[in-house]
Length: 233
Image (cartoon, rainbow, N blue to C red; front, side, top):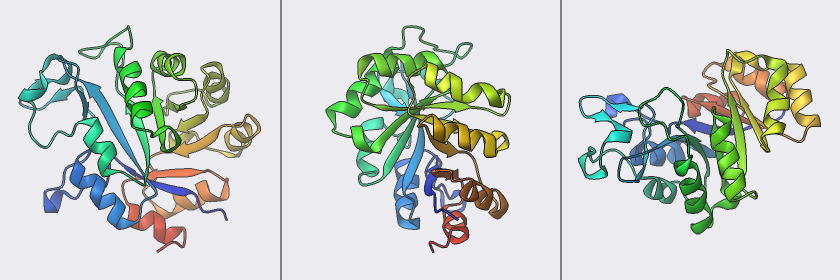
């Protein structure tokens, strides 16, 4: 059995200790638990700040895309600070810019801004930029084609279309939901030269299956469990 890399999904939050997901504290905790990398979500505020938050709206505050950055709670991390906190780890930056969401930017300014930041900070070799929205990945590729990009595919995708779609948009990786993962997809991705990172694996069976299929990375909410299952305690 191969030993995939383990990435902490939105860092390693610990609500009992007051550590929220997608925060600097969650990224530090992921490192302490032994994660190889961190997956985080990025949105852009009305004044152009890149902030780390999953949902399009901050509960009790408002839509992220309509807020100026100085109105955000202190715990909402800026992307540059998050990258600093993850120094030495792989960082999977998921671009949150989907049609239908408040603040959707069809011009993909956020995608280009993230790409510029990654290059300016010298993180090209340790960052993967992913998205469900192919337009965002196209914008990253157009701005800096050397950057690694991963097509996120949810459980609603047709499995047979995943690899061709990733290749069509110049991706170097495919990030399928674990329900889509099977031998055919693993073989197809490998033959196409795409790395595989599957999400979100939180039980021993799914982690073992991913490893047996040769998946390169498992994204998990439970870093300690994943490392234990993989014999990396």
